[in-house]
Length: 158
Image (cartoon, rainbow, N blue to C red; front, top):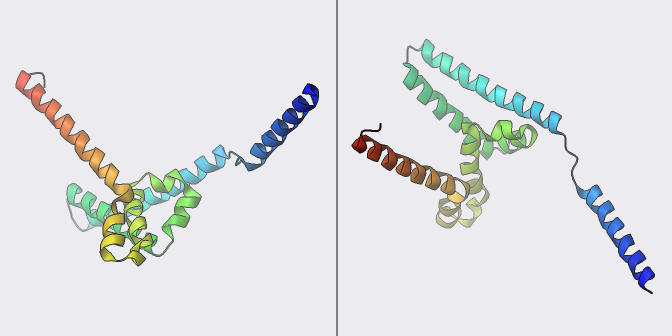
């Protein structure tokens, strides 16, 4: 009786292992890395082209950088609204999610997704679903580092 129970238990374990093997996605690390590199590289090339154009207009380095960031964010939000950026991010992975365009996408996507719930409860509340924690931790970390820097200045360490 015990051996039948053990055989049944072993069979279930083997079936479960086979199920897990079938359901686990295949790791395509090399392909994913190449796609991320290509996607991030194209985004960076577009940013560099914008920066070069701004310099052709005799704008300073700082102003050119600001315009470049602004235009990249705008393009990302427009492409998110047209449902193109999510497809780019799906193909390019981290290459599309890491640059400033990925952050703009993460802010715009929840707002677009929940627009049917209305201006206040849909767009107004959901726009900070992903960006809210990033902004919060960025502000808190900046404050803590500022306090540490201030104390260091008072003590003459910095």
